[in-house]
Image (cartoon, rainbow, N blue to C red; front, side, top):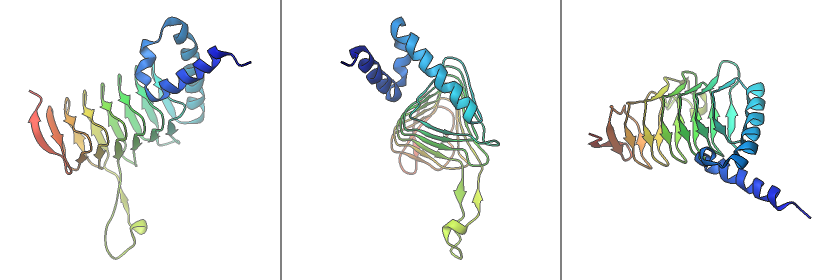
Length: 203
């Protein structure tokens, strides 16, 4: 006969994979096994990939973290990465950052920087590289550029937002869901649409 407590724990892990913010609300009896689970997985990840992980983080074992030498991923304190995300360095993630499920971040050559307290909702895509489009060659033979992406402090990217290479989003900005960011976003701007346009200022 299976242990119902173990079955519950597996479901609890599954819930945390997709809703990692609950990790910081666990009761002591659950936090004990959850911390051990995270410590074991994060140690494995840091052994297998070029990853540095800060204190009190949650990283779902169902996320895909790839950071070969030269493409380091740095993760700040109190940050979470949910299930089914794909991260390919170089990426520098600050403190108290939230990356929700099914996000894709590829740092290209120049990298992605997420400053402190960035919130990235589910299904966002940030690609810090781009192909050439000269008609004389097939796309796959075109040169690839990489300018990098920088997301400022306290920025919120709504669900299904796309950010193209070379973009800077200023501190305290908000990008509405299903928007495509093709131009820089200034501090405190609220933008939305495809391409994203100014809606109002947070002030």
